[in-house]
Amino acid sequence: MRNNELAVTYAEFTELDPHNMTDLERVIWAEQIGQREHCRDYWSEPLSAANAGKRNDSYRNGCYESLWRHHNNFIEGHSRGSDSIRFDQAARIANWLDIPGDTLVTMDPSPLDLAIAAREQGNRYEEGDYETALDDEWFGLVPGRVPGHFSVTGPWPRNPFEVGPMVGDSSDTGNCARYYPQLFTGRWIPLDTAIRRQEIQEYLATRTPTPVPDDFGEWVNQRDRQVYVG
Image (tube, rainbow, N blue to C red; front, side, top):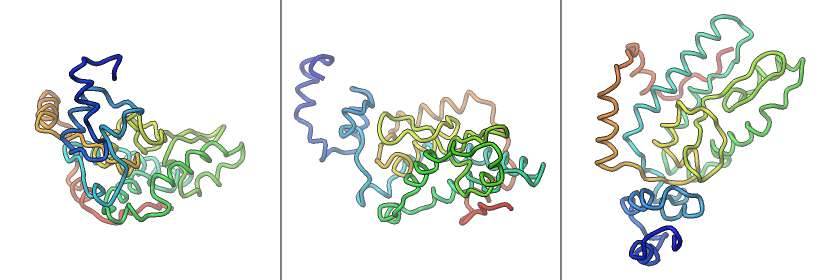
């Protein structure tokens, strides 16, 4: 900060208490200094009971639309044959998005813990271990492959922040990490401002809307979505 910012900006920065900042202050300083990991306490904060219920609602629709596409791809793939992956991981993530903040704080293991474990074992399958992969409850959540058969990217979102574990590689579900960052990074990262909401609305206005089926809203508002499709 001392080497890269104006003296007045650096002076303001040194007066900050990273453990006592408002969400708006964190948003402003993220824009000023960038979302750099070594400054993470100035633009984010660890998951706690005080911030667990917060959401960046501007990103909610984009999150669920991307999960809906993954869900449909899973259903279509499964309908083509009984040897498809048997767990709808997009539905699992959608179920996790319904977890109240006060519950997430006390979960052990948390969804993030489970995703990290799935990533660590995701490429362990050897030739001939095809059925074992299909029966693995977590296979397909994050990137993984069965040599000689197929590979999957997994709907777990790519972490767009330089903070927390980098587990997923799915950029199209990145809005989920923005909507509920505590679930996917272990930290609260405020993003919503009036300007940000306006930018999103202006961007959406330039796009041709993608029609969604009538049951999209029903799936989004559903609870305890079916995960196993045997």
